[in-house]
Image (cartoon, rainbow, N blue to C red; front, side):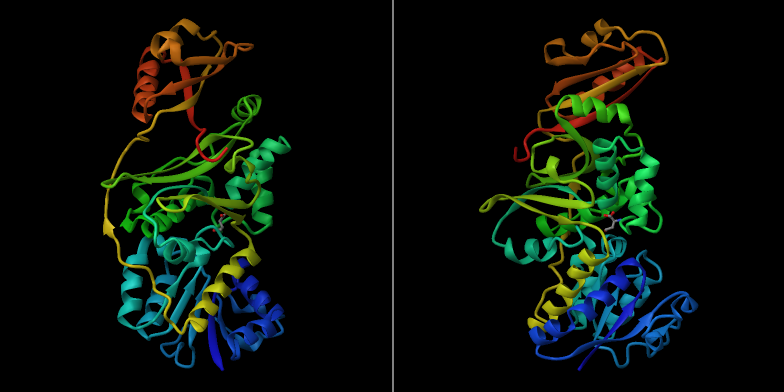
Length: 416
Ligand code: HSE
């Protein structure tokens, strides 16, 4: 008989508990032994007084908390006190399964070292892309490849909001509220909508895919709070959708990594991923382009990844590696490839001069898309790299101080 301590019983924790009970027989059969959740640590005990297994709940983390425990499942979220609890478990040689992307993005290297030193396993499949088994796939199944590119949608909440704005013309606040009610959003949804959650996941995936450490805060991050209905209408009129795209690229010496709202063709692989679904497109030198997609947020998809991690440790007799320790890597500041960008200019009332646009951006590379309203002009411009577009935008603003400007990368090249 094996014992599990469950740390946290919120959306994900209760999902793990439910799935564990639902599939208990088949889980035990596959494992060849019985595994039970024997204690559940929560912040506010009184909230759980109606739970049928209330006697397993506690709000006290004692020094001997792990004494009769074999596995620890951490689903509390945030760094503290999850970091202290996970560290103590690993130091005591207990195997840990966590869904905590904040923790793994910030402290993953350190905790992996502690796990290895104590002959324990630290698994974190649920920390990236919810139910999609991408961590194990990158670490093990694709290990024979050199991976040089990841293009992904890694946040369910923002994908849900952007989908509702696109499909139903729903406003941003209503869509966010629905995502919160469905249990997709973080306790503080700022990290979803500002792109931090996707950046943390991208840094975890990038470390495993390229064997290089990039601190998530060094990723160039832009959230979806600046995306408005008109941007979405512009995109729609050109057969694009706007998605919060997380991408990283390794050229052998430097990594470029960004999370930003971008235009993707509506019939491309990424363009077809809607609502809380996530996708990860990986380029390996042997496998070529390979695509994974599925539910990236929500209680049961996340619980699926957690139980898979647990069973993996038992079935593989603890041989699952915590991932090798990676080196630090220099970062590039600009997307280094030629691509099209969608640029939108807005004035407070005066018509925008198309000549000014042509003077600033190379005229032969500009296609104006909508001239019905000369106070709000959208155009597509081809740029040799991201530096070109940034320089041109700065230059344009310097000469047209009364205008506001925003621009989106257009991903044309990810699997049509
Ligand atoms: N808030 C996260 C999301 C949950 O929306 O993707 C899954 O990590």
